[in-house]
Length: 325
Image (cartoon, rainbow, N blue to C red; front, top):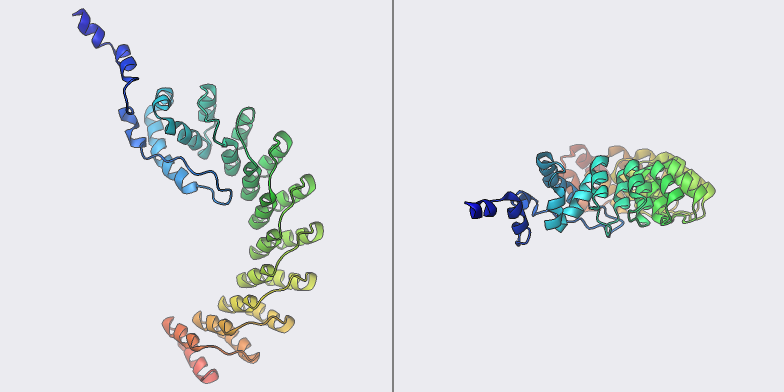
């Protein structure tokens, strides 16, 4: 019958269903997609992007690009998550497809995300029309992507913040620290040297000391002592005047950094607290206990309690003999 042929026509069915509420059946597995929060420069939403990828990847494997245009039209959230997924996995061809179909969400700083992941070719593709903020260079510098930092410096106007050099110092990305110093004016904060010291990047500590004026704080020695970076502790002691706190000895003792403890007690005046011996006892650092004892340190009852909890019999015997009170 003629009317049956009309009503059963697939093209007509697609037109009718386009005006119905809801989403297509094949998109139901994607209903739990959540657009990641890209508004916090200090916290990249990797968990959300990874969870979304677990949903998007099998959908793309099944349907490819054939159903993308129709799907995005009925499910706006999919547009954002699909674009971010393409950038996350570095799929330039998918980014190009979305761009050619005008499906890239212009209200999302896609260049920032591509810069974070180090996908230079995608940054270059997005550059003519993509949205970016200062976070693009900040995140690229933080992640060690020098080529992207250089591209953004030459081709974009957003610039960066002090976070770029500070986080590059934290990550040990010397070439980026040097590039930002020589080519840009945003600078860094004292946290750059603090973090470089904490992570054991002596070359960056020395570079910042020589070429920058932001300096450091007491945390530089405290943190490097805690990590056992003797060379940095020594260098900071002889070359800078930022000081330290009692935490340097306390933390170095707790973590068993014997040479650092010895240096701090023989060369500096901040000293430590009873936490030093308590921490050393807790973790079974006998050599540190001997050093602290020689410098007149005492402990609290926590020392014996901690040693007992961790089965350090030799420490218990030592405490009984040397710290009977």
